[in-house]
Image (cartoon, each protein chain N blue to C red):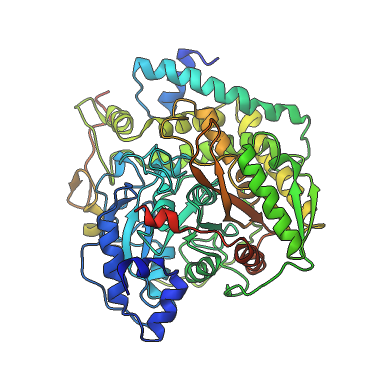
Length: 96
Length: 483
């Protein structure tokens, strides 16, 4: 069973704010899921098995470096919640 | 033709009539646009309101319109991935897969509802409300591509795109009685697909039949300078023509075709195996010894990748922002708390935990090794069999709300589809009959038959599915007539 402290620690790492109710519920739900997932421990020793990070074996192939037009700053900034001239405005990182 | 007759045509039939000069693309557009605008299944999050766009009858898709899952970026058109955090987000560019479809001559009809960021098996995790199953509106269409599946089944679109990370095309296709195809990982570019789990995410098709699947797939595949993991396919996708299964060896993995499958689904599966035998196939049982652990490996790998991919939603560059003046960190955590739904938070938490210091080797590292063992199981099975077949979903469509309080029960929906995703191999679901839901319901609901082949066996797979589909003669009209 994940403790409230563990849940809050993971939430901090994940940049998620959780209500007290969510902390309790998440602890229970994650524990249930982890109990099931831990069955992969039953598979015994997997020493020497190469982990798969990608299913298709690919080798890097270099292509010509050909410059092309990217999206203009104006187009990109149009989606931002608080655009500033030439950038994204954010709250100060120093106040918390 | 009446509107009902028009939407009764498969896409290939419509293309044939357009080429023969018997049907105007604009007439087809209007018929589908009217049905899409009247959508009462909540299958759509956006429907085109423009008049029929110019169409080229000589183009491969001849102007037959397409519905697109919301997580594909479409320039200037809302692409919200089922999430509140992207409400009203209109991307400045179009996903390669969708641009390829436009270039092949199919215009965009609508964007389809989905589970938030493709996380779910019932479409109940959408911030824009659940999608209803056209066979029974009290039931879910499956997920995560539930809107695409319901729209095609109900005749609100001729065909649609979807994405499949652990079953998100195949399972809803099965629950809605249509064809869902997840090709080999890397066949279609992921550029402009809002990412969930990058090593598993694969675009694919929802269609009325197997021939349409081949047509739409051929339009979508191809290498892309914007996605270095995209390979395309070694040969063009051809319309299938097989009339029998002579010489085809089908393997039935015992781990995915017994325990946990509803009796009605198993009965339909057995009947389809008999039909395959009648068509000349050999059918033998086999084993995928590590498949039973597929779900565990998947629910470590997918959340781990999701926790990383979804870090980009931080209220800075796009989407919503919640800022109550507490500084940058508060803005991040407050935005994500308000913008993400429960299931997405759960998976971010699970993934962050699995990747955190002290747990990485036991969880994520081990899951990646299990993934290798599952790929080896498939490789070994494909030395003796051309295809492996299973029921697509362990059950028929369930009632709305039936599993929403139990994440683990919901995850079991992906039991038969996850192993193929982990191995990156192509798999397709065709409707193979109907069954009654457990618990004394008299409603007949569609079941799905999954066929999986080795990587890059798309053409062979489509031919086998086509021969079976022809013999099965599944009647999909009830879902269209109800809408």
